[in-house]
Amino acid sequence: MDLELSGKVVLVTGSSDGLGAAVARRLVREGARVALCARGAERLEATAAALRADGGDVLAMPADVSKAYELEHFVDAAQARWGRVDGLVNNAGSAAGKPFASVTDAEWEADLQLKLFAAVRAARHVLPHLSASGGGSIVNVLSIRAKEPGAQSTPSSVTRAAGMALMKALSKELGPRDIRVNAVLVGMIESGQWEKRAQKAGKPLAELQAELARNAGVPLGRIGKPEEFADVVAFLLSPRAGYISGTAINVDGGLSGAV
Ligand SMILES: NC(=O)c1ccc[n+]([C@@H]2O[C@H](COP(=O)([O-])OP(=O)(O)OC[C@H]3O[C@@H](n4cnc5c(N)ncnc54)[C@H](OP(=O)(O)O)[C@@H]3O)[C@@H](O)[C@H]2O)c1
Image 1: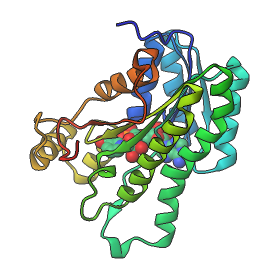
Image 2: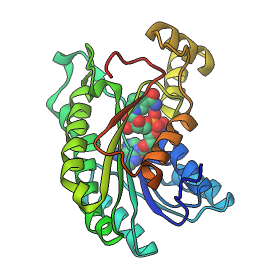
Image 3: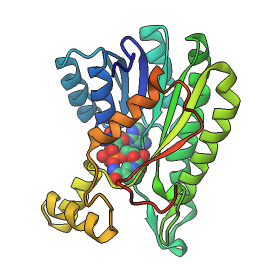
Image 4: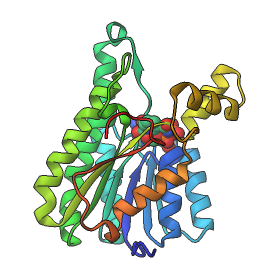
């Protein structure tokens, strides 16, 4: 299926590694022009260089999305380079869940800044550009915890539930401007964060992943691949998903009990 993304301009936050980088690779394959950001300049540039080697028209800008000025500068840079914006993927984030009583105010604040306020600010800043392009698509990357918070999942599950409410509210408000807003709720998918966990546990990555999938009871019996996630995001960004808005899709191998 041709996703009709050729020439579209899409911003992907947190895209030097993991799921964000997989989305960027998928979009480049579709002929989209992609703006990448992350905090670490070196890894970001390496990811951008690989995409350019594949023929991608790519902008890479070091930016911490929890800092309003850096995030806005990133959006402005993409608009300045290509003169339009058609899509935004709010992906930057990290795992954060531990016993409630041990989560400090500073950790609540940091989680909300990174995963909620960044999505709020990016959407607000990108809106005029999407409108000027005649519409567009916003995809917020969340976690299945947004629908089904578990024990020891704060602050992340609360931030993710707020992200889902943001997505729904925006989909209602922006629909008349032909801007679709959706969320993808991730279960367990291979990425840099799992590699770091494997190193910490002193286990080979494949062994850790098989163990996690078994212990969690993933119905499909395995952890997901970043490409499987990227396919869903690329579809939601594309005109082929033209009548899909206000939806939160689980990409979790059937793990979540919530529909
Ligand atoms: N993989 C999973 O199983 C899973 C499960 C549930 C939810 N998720 C969510 O899916 C998203 C992607 O996760 P992932 O597994 O791909 O993570 P990852 O492998 O750790 O990659 C995270 C990416 O985001 C960037 N990043 C982190 N903090 C940032 C910040 N403040 N500003 C800008 N960029 C930032 C990182 O680069 P720098 O460190 O250089 O900034 C990196 O490029 C996250 O929101 C995560 O919470 C993933």
